[in-house]
Image 1 (cartoon, rainbow, N blue to C red):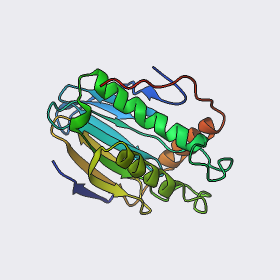
Image 2: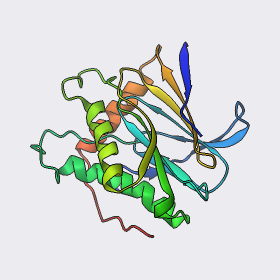
Image 3: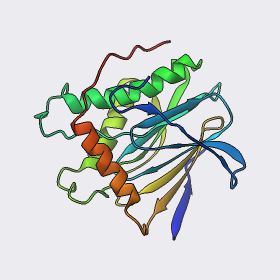
Length: 212
C-alpha cells in the first residue's frame, strides 16, 4: 500500500473508554497501545500510541516538561438537532471527549501550563457525509476547543481526503503520520460509521472534573 510518511516534529462515560489494545511494536521496538474510535489513552511511560483516522480527529496532548501524554479519537455526533446552538449536544460531547483526555493527563501529574497539542484527522472519507462536512466540523471543533483552553497547538495535519495512521511518542512529542492514499478495505470507514451510529443513540452521563 503506497503511503506517505511525514515527520511533524519533535471512567467510561458517553463513548469514551480507556484503550484496551496493548501490544509490542516490533518496528519501533517499544510497548504500544492502539486507540480505536471513542477511546483514549494516557501514559507517563516511554511508549507508542497509534490510531487510524478517517473523519475522526485525534488530539495528541503532552506535558512538554514531564513527557506525560495521551491521545484521543473522537468525532462530533450528528449536529442535525443542534440548530447551530454552540451549547448543543455536539459541542457538549466534543468538550467531554477533550476533557476526558486532559483530566487523565492531570491525574497522572501533568501541569496544565505545560500542555501542548498536535491535532490530526478530519478527512472527508465517509461516504454519504460529504454534505455535512463531518471531518471539517471535527477539525474546527478540536482547534477551537484548544484555543479556548489556551493549550498551544504546535503541529496539525487536518482535513484533505485521505485516512491517516498516526504514531505518537508522548515522551518526546514526536508524531509520525502516514496518509493512506490507497485503502484496500473499508475497515476504517466501517468503524467510524458504527461509532457515529453509537453516538446518535447515546446519552452523556455525569460531569468531568478537572484536576490541576
